[in-house]
Length: 412
Ligand code: HGY
Ligand code: MN
Ligand code: MN
Image 1 (cartoon, rainbow, N blue to C red):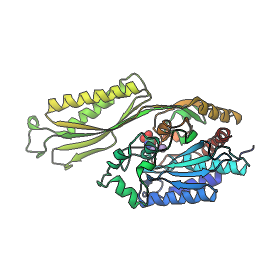
Image 2: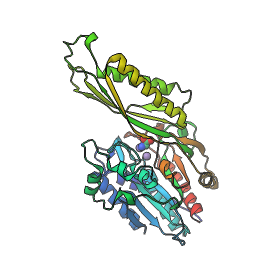
Image 3: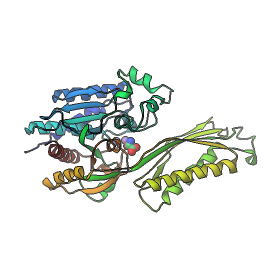
Image 4: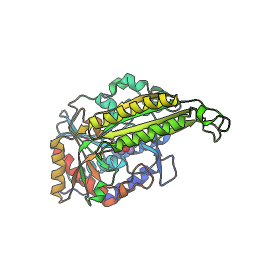
């Protein structure tokens, strides 16, 4: 079978999708359930219908575009990713897996392939934590990792409830209907940009992901007492920002001291109240994101943060409250799916590197209900979650070709 990837069309579709954004180009911002996000989904649904795929959207906004196989009752082969984008992001994160997955299906159709197992493209809802504070909301509900009740308790920064927001975005049904049975997919494969510099540094055109790191995130609130920046003398202060600064540096030190390069910790949001140049910070809220391919090492960093909170609270006479938002286990790729990817690379003489994913992805949760693996393509300087995120048309076409070969092998 001679599979040809139409990389002009794929590149132009990536550019067309990037136009659905609430930021000025080249930045892309596409937050869950905003009108822009819904228009982007409608645009992709139209592309899937053009390819003759059968569409279904579930109650949380996951979209399933199915190419029905000759044995429609057998477990399907899933592929796909997400199209929501954090503020001021790039145009490739997630999108390569969705539009590359669609082009892989179209290329197989053009090559005359007929799947036995149905092939299903998924566009997951809310892979990014931007709106409701937890990533992979769609795949967590699909896999039963998050309960419908826990999801219904979520609110966005404007205190809008998930139920109200999803319904006003036009989603019917109940969250109880989202969960899929364990034998729904025979395998799930996700194509994604690496979001790191390893492939480029090692001069490898493809990465076959063997495990996905374990993510955890928290929200920490430090309450001190405010006051006048001139009138309150240093010994009398309970400065919430100085306390938070100690915690943030302790967290960095802890992540750097595990002896493993795979331990990472990030404070990406830090809100200061009242945030006035001449007023002592009374309250600080910051987020913590800790990951590691090894669960024990990750949890040790969380325990050390907990200890630092207690120590700083008593020494500085401030109150510190931390709320755990998620603490997920890592995921191992299934050897059979890894082998299918390796054979597809070898069939085309493409070099590849077996590697971990330090970013999390919907595959982390799909691994709870199906054998998974991921295929990475390089992105320039490893940049991602920023407007200058870039992966070349060649790299995208190569990843899409290997994905198409893998889907065909798994769907036979
Ligand atoms: O944060 C992550 O790892 C993913 O890009 N949402
Ligand atoms: Mn992302
Ligand atoms: Mn992503």
